[in-house]
Amino acid sequence: MSNSALNFRSLPVSERIELVEDIWDSIAEDTGGNVPLSAEQRAELHRRLAAHQADPSSSLPWEQVRERLFKGTA
Image (tube, rainbow, N blue to C red):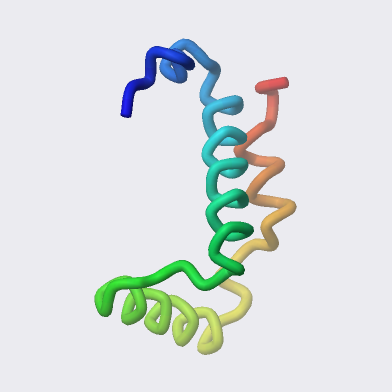
């Protein structure tokens, strides 16, 4: 695969993040949301979920995270 069609490194970080989100969304669409995970990835997801359930106040809603990521990058 070549990146000659799109020089993604020339894009601002905010646009590269949006590109990754779009790619991820297309993968989720194509796989029906059933993206295969390795045993390590599955274990990490379970660990993070357990940590969140033990202390829900330690996380932020996606809207707040996204706002922080894109703050001042419009």
